[in-house]
Amino acid sequence: MSSTAAAPGIIFGRHRKIMPYLPAGLPAGQAALYRERHEKAASLNSHLLGFGAVAEAEWAAGGLPQPDIAAMRRYRLERIRAELRRRDLAGVLLYDPVNIRYATDTTNMQVWVAHNPSRYCFVANDGPVVLFDYFNCEHMAEQSEVVDQVRPAVSFLYFYVGDNQPIRIARWADGIAELMREHGGGNRRLAVDHLDVEPAAALRERGMEIVDAWGVMELARVIKSADEITCMRRAIVSCEAAMAEMEAALRPGITENELWAELHRGNIARGGEWIETRLLTSGPRTNPWFQECSARVIEAGDLVAFDTDLIGPHGFCADISRTWLCGDGPATSEQRDLFRAAIEQVEHNSELLRPGISFRELVERSKNPPQDALACRYSVLYHGVGLADEYPTLPYLADWAADTADGVLEAGMVLCVESYVGRLGGREGVKYEEQVLVTENGPEQLSTYPLDARLAA
Image (cartoon, rainbow, N blue to C red; front, side):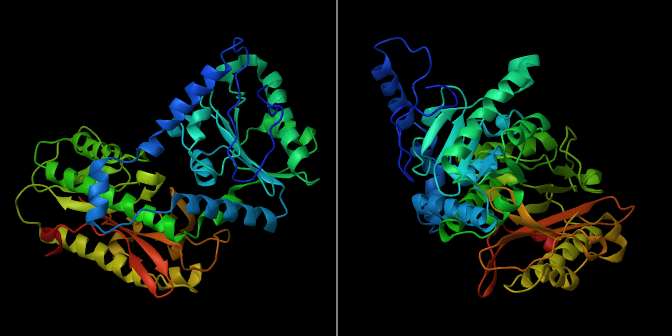
């Protein structure tokens, strides 16, 4: 089949796996061998091989059950389609790898495709899920029963085609237009999350109305199913196990980079995926916040503050912040005061997370850092979290603007409760953050990593 046309005889059926495409130019008599290649690769997919004995043992020790992954996939797909129906959209075209993960539960070179758009997915309102994957990668989606068909991606990156971009874009747009004609039911409205100016224009030239997809996807992702919460708990357990290894490695003389590498190692060893930032600092680099970790040698008596921003097992984010004291000595009174202020802020604000409270009321009732630390405050009080940082983001009241989104908390939302306390002109600061599930009965803190006892004294 071509890169834009379905193979002859293929009938789309929701939740029905189909045979892979055969690549162009395949020599006669090699079709069976190619299918054997596909089956071999699919059987060895990392999603099928699991997360390893270490992670599984830690989850078993924590009493965490196996999630129903098939049910989770169906739940997510229905959440997307409900948003498409609500907005009268024929479908959604996704390039963001986290959105593709949500829609299909498939992965392939997640960080690379985030800045090299060579993998995308079409989800019809009432029709197929078609994944356009990287060259010769059709086996990467075999384990996901919600993917109806895999086709080779048509990438129009300059990296691939140079000044022939207009020709490649036209071929790509013809393929999307064909899907819309076949499965749009006459509706020409298509939501897209990431698209450059030229390909967007090419779709409009073919009669499509292009709508931003981020509202579709963020609102679909905002309420987690029970299976998603189980996956998130697993990611947090793995993250906190890696944090324990990291804390055990903390000693005077280690560099920030060396310490940060321990978190990466622990995450990957447990089947995690990547870490989004490099937010670990020590001593004077903890104030102000937002420095990337460095070659600085950590000294005895330094505060060490970090934010995990970790994409762990099942692709779920564990976004937890802690501040530790390096060495065997006691904390100073100033270090304890900063730490206490951060703890009190997060504890107070976590208790406010109950269904029915509006975003604005939540912010109005939230506790701030001390006045002499307010100028150095963190960027937000709360933000949603799931497969990554997600909607909503709730700023401090002083930062609430006319274009800040209001809304209402609902059961099934998960939020990170943030604090950074560092005095203006001070030497050090404390970063603290917990991950909290909103339930019908109020907040449930999902993150459980213990606090540094010397700072909490």
